[in-house]
Image (cartoon, rainbow, N blue to C red; front, side, top):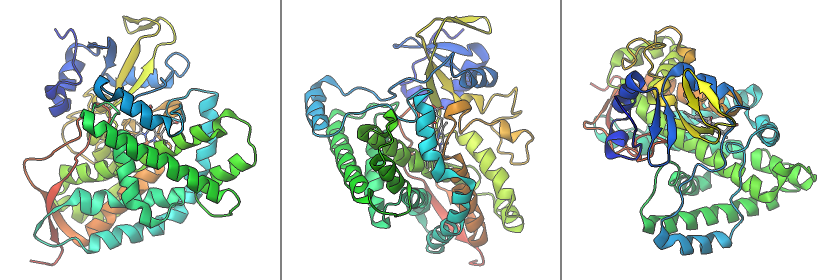
Length: 412
Ligand code: HEM
């Protein structure tokens, strides 16, 4: 009988699927040490908690604190910037509703429709130059640049900012569910200060412009004196940070992981080529299996009886999307990639309830287009074994590089 789990252990980080599977069977609500959180692994329980916004609000910060030896230096760097606040992902209604309204305008079906041909062109440009028959880093050469490019368009940043966006988002996720080495903390904090300064500069420059993009729109809202709390400058900076990180880290890692899952199988690529809509199923099944956001965190607002387990008021619960998405009660043979499986929409890789991913439509569009464009050009993409390395975070999981050999169509 499992009595507790160490989510920072090498074993958990190396083999999340196996560890979570064992917990689902033996302890679907399992204490996490040393924090005394509760890890919830069953699909029905995860879903129930995510839908109960009042009973289980989100918590302010998901970031680790810096180690003692660099705490002063980190504080000094942070003092030169704007305070870290809560924004979209870390606030609750009614604040959360205000933030969501601010960003929703940039993710409407109409906006995505306008973006579609541009994303397709960008994917095609990247796919066209993938070399045939030699080992490449598919992550760096295709999977990562596409979402970085797309989020730049959504925000209204010039393409020359791509390298900066990657640097900033690496820094921003470095402390979510993982603790970087002390020396790296300093570098990451400096990158985040640079991000803040750049965003403030861009917000100020866009204030009186009629430029497209989310940053210019937020700048105008700020200038119009929208007096809701959400428009304060530090909060806007945090909001932009959330969008930059969420907008490319998860999607880039996902596209690489999806190709790792089925890329070597020419029948999948051929089926997408014959029927481009089939890419929707492929993406949905691959994102179920990858679950790039492995866990989300909430806190019990009151004592709550969860299927016989009493969760005391104030207790933090870690909801395992990665586990819920492999719950055999909902997805028979969960470790088998089966894009034809029924009930795929029950997967929760993009969350559930009020915090469900604001960028899900964009992420799906980018990934579907990526697969369609690749299917036109490649026969298969064979990942190099062994896989890895992967992120060392219990929140965001994905390959840091994905070495693979692309076999282009008609090249034999
Ligand atoms: C495969 C790609 C992606 C995955 C797996 C993913 C996953 C998630 C999940 C699970 C949540 C819910 C977090 C929670 O409940 O606490 C979330 C929220 C969020 N995502 Fe995504 N995401 C992806 C892509 C994107 C993209 C492309 C963007 C933006 C352009 C984005 C922006 C956000 C934001 C801002 C939130 C916070 C929403 C809120 O709290 O209301 N994500 N995402």
